[in-house]
Length: 286
Image 1 (cartoon, one colour):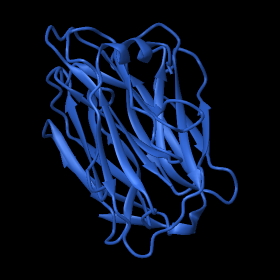
Image 2 (cartoon, helix red, strand yellow):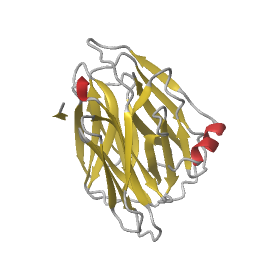
Image 3 (cartoon, rainbow, N blue to C red):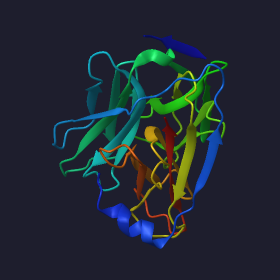
Image 4 (cartoon, helix red, strand yellow):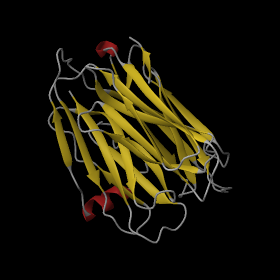
């Protein structure tokens, strides 16, 4: 593990929420010393809208603020574009998209950063697995005494032929596990990196999740319940169950500019013909 140190598609999800939501909330008690987390600042940036592939977007936190959470969205990909990377640094978030095969329509990617003061000794933990195995999972763990605020991932050597399927914070908010699956018999060597954005624990931290119905409909998406009380989303995650290697993650992002919920969306690249679901995670802190 290495550590860096330092100082919507929105219309779809409402219909899906009406069909069914699963909710899991885990309250994390503070270690000593806990920090008070002010309301975060959300910023975003979108790439050019065209048919070029691959493409990327980079968003930077305002001066004096650090990245606590990262997310991204593929806009207009219609199940043909892999969101291959959501890469946080201490000051920026970079999101890459790449077509699975030639796709004539215009599309773009959006990068989201959730920013706050670097008072909690923000660090970015990461861990990488590199081989030809599929599926592949890797876990990035926060340093002892720190808690997980945000997530991210990166694929290398996949060239649009590997689909991220899991960006899952653990219940204790001490690590994040990232998974990906090769599509269509792709046998080349590729690497998968998990990123965990960590800092001193807040006085109140809670993981909130929601899952879409498991059925054969596509695309589908889900928004978590709102963060409780005066807490805000500092980080997000997503997971796909069923259809692995044929279903693309297209959104893993805060659901609104108010930073009170998380959103995940996915679509089929190849027809699955079986039930699958998508789960959204929100890390709420204050």
